[in-house]
Image 1: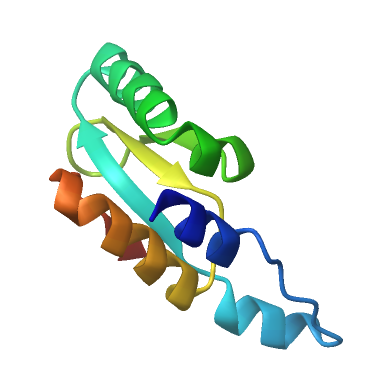
Image 2: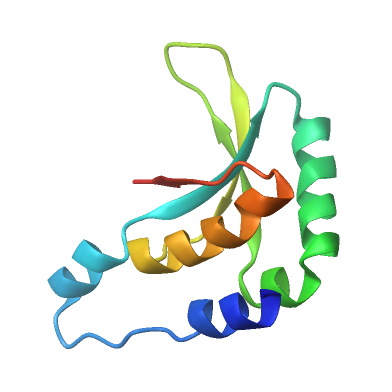
Length: 103
């Protein structure tokens, strides 16, 4: 299943119009949020190890989120199409890994 998802996620789309690209690829997958940076780093390493073939081609990032509420750290992918995020999340949920599409 990891190889199948990997194939579906690594094919980038080419658009003649940048507006079309932005409409389809302005989502990212959130794979966890943490109050402590150390916990986010540990989970990122766990995900990259467990799904090494997938996340070798689809890097994960830790984003520091600050705003009106408390600071937190989000593990996320780069921008993907909604379809690609669904494929990724369909692979994560059976492993009890929360996966959400975000804009």
